[in-house]
Amino acid sequence: MQADLSPVIAATAQWLTRSFPASGGALASALCEVQARQAVTVAAWLRYPTEMDAALLGMAGPGGSARLDWVTGADGALGDDADAHAWRTWVDEVVASWAASLLTDPELAALAVAALAQGSHSTGTPAEFRRLVAPDDSDRRAAALLRHPDLLAPVAELHHTQLLDRLNPGRTLIA
Image (cartoon, rainbow, N blue to C red; front, side, top):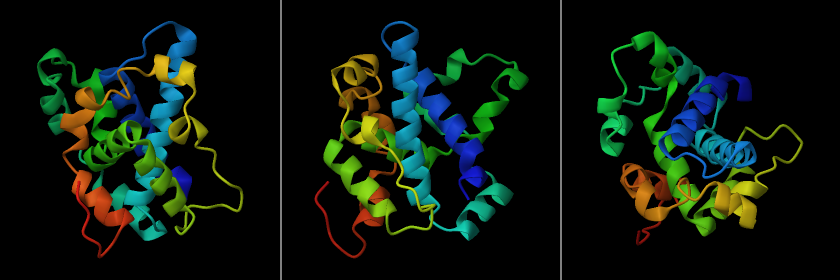
């Protein structure tokens, strides 16, 4: 099941880490990437909770990063080499938006990880999302841009209400 979503998870995490890069060297980059991948994994599993959802995504495709690039102002810097950016076609806008919301709101991240227990993505072993829900100081420093609420706000706000609806169906929440 997880393999069906792996291209979307990889591309969306890559989009986040390229748009909001780590501050520091190789270790900071690795810590930033882990946090992005954990947030994107949680968001993808929430967005596509069943095998059928993942199969439909595989058939229809996720939509790409064009709107996200436009929202963040990166669309002009991409250049004309389509082959160099082919991976961007696997970016899922909703998953990126939900991941941005999770990265900037620890309570929402904890709620989202708890909601995964009810889904079909569990494989019998508990998933590890510590760097998402309980980042330490080195995680925060490495991902200062990736977790900055003001910087991620334009992306997070795109589909924030849908995330709240997914986590609290039938309840009215104040965002």
